[in-house]
Length: 125
Image 1 (tube, helix red, strand yellow):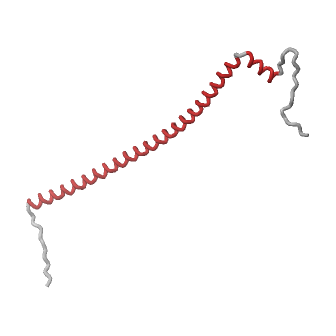
Image 2 (cartoon, helix red, strand yellow):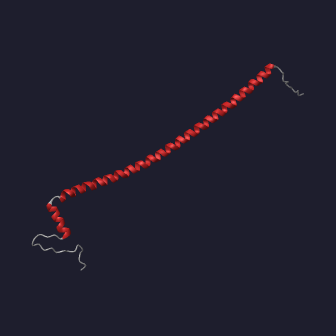
Image 3 (tube, rainbow, N blue to C red):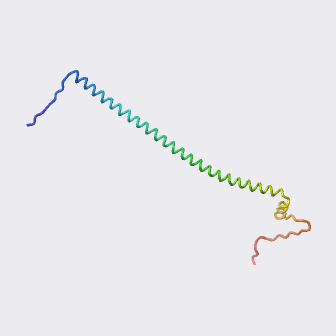
């Protein structure tokens, strides 16, 4: 025999207060969950924006570093060129060097000297 047990609800002020208390606790729990979800979402947004910013800054840094290296190489070549030009300037202040250039490039000759131009190419025979 199966007996059905039924519990009847008592209408009393204690039960009304208890149900109000349970309802308040349920609402509190629901609000807490919503606040935690909102806080989690906010933290996710902040973290992702910081990560994106970090990646962008690393890319900018890498570009600037590459540009710096390229400019360093360019500066080194320009310094080398400057050193060569200074050396040439000093040589051009020497009369013998200037005369040698004039003789080789512009066929300038000394008195009584005859210049014969010999081609740089080998003869084909």
